[in-house]
Image (cartoon, rainbow, N blue to C red; front, side, top):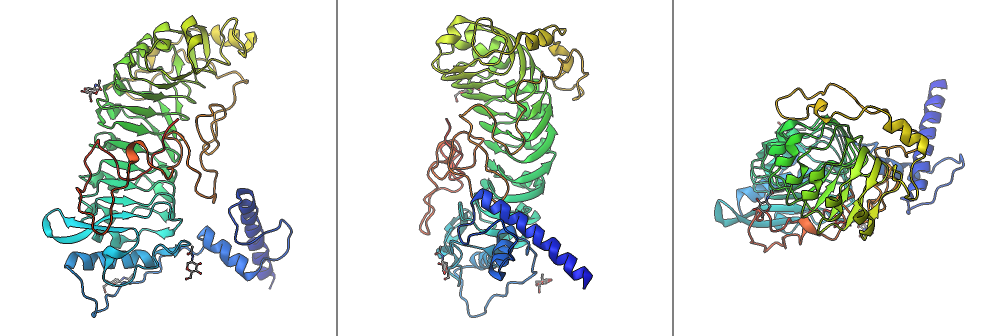
Length: 496
Ligand SMILES: *[C@@H]1O[C@H](CO)[C@@H](O)[C@H](O)[C@H]1NC(C)=O
Ligand SMILES: *[C@@H]1O[C@H](CO)[C@@H](O)[C@H](O)[C@H]1NC(C)=O
Ligand SMILES: *[C@@H]1O[C@H](CO)[C@@H](O)[C@H](O)[C@H]1NC(C)=O
């Protein structure tokens, strides 16, 4: 009896806590809650349990195929098994997306797209799944590995949890995998490394943790989005081997060097490393990244100067080095870059900037040690920082074939107390308004469409996200899509 009472009380406080969260996140429109200790109604408890997935369990149901069902071909029969198993693994589908997932005509299911098989043009098979913004809760069952003709798998902005099933290694044609803005957890899903056709990998806004396998950067991918997870890791020296045009690792716990091999990334167009704990110098020959349009290393612990060669980033439009421990002078060549639209270098320890910098249409030089400029650090902070021995960038040994952990020599002192603390993993970076706040944790509704690759995928596709392949049941266009033309889905946010 005693025991029961205690359990009830505990459960009740837990639920109250969740309710509090709901109210704060204003997610719950379906019923109103109060902060009082009034007991919850049965329906309220059920509602919370559904939202929180407290009832999550693999119910181990098995799909049995009704012998009276007729299928166009055996692969569609397999697809039926996969999709029915998935439907059983769905615990909440508030928009009724899977309501019509009934019967043998899987090509007519909402979110399921068929196309002629690549190896047999006479039959149709399931080539794409697109449940983006479905708000569906559930998990991915092993049976999804039966969808062996799948080229696109897009489930962004749902409430899928658990991990990526190992059977995904059977998806040899999978070209785009978008799991962003869900509740996947656990280690990096290494099964993605076994997908020979994969070009677009989007794991943003999940709860993945631990290290990132260095093989990821040797893989022939075009886009890597792993921002807003809990990865904790050093960027490996083979980063430079990666053929990606876009890489976003923002808002994780990366530390250590910016590898010098970074400058060898041969297709690099956009790189966003913001809000990690990278603590080396920038590679001196960074200007070799001739095609980079977006370069963002803000909110790290980078030291040393802004290399003169940054002035060689002839295509750069957005350049952000704010909130680091950089020092020295801002070279004029950078502020003269022909396409530079926004240059942010606030919250560092720069002591000089070329006059041309002050004529940029958008720049931010606050909280440095710039003589005669407004909103600078105090002279006490500046002199404390600048009296330290100069940073020896060589000492970090961020190059290839050198031990990854640099001897810590001439490291600058910890930042003086005034700069705002680097944001916590889920808090929006304090100052630059260009970055939209990440979705607030937990249980908040899918964040609104916003800007920048650090934000969650917005609905309207831009950049790599252009028009979802008109996957319609009749769609027979090229699948997988041609690289470099446009990605079908993940709505990587437009940016800025
Ligand atoms: C599903 O059915 C197969 C074949 O009958 C069986 O081997 C498997 O154990 C079943 N799985 C579950 C979870 O019941
Ligand atoms: C989904 O279906 C249920 C039952 O058929 C219905 O009550 C509900 O309004 C539907 N929801 C939407 C968003 O259509
Ligand atoms: C830049 O892009 C052009 C055209 O796509 C390509 O030929 C060239 O190799 C690229 N250069 C670098 C340094 O990335």
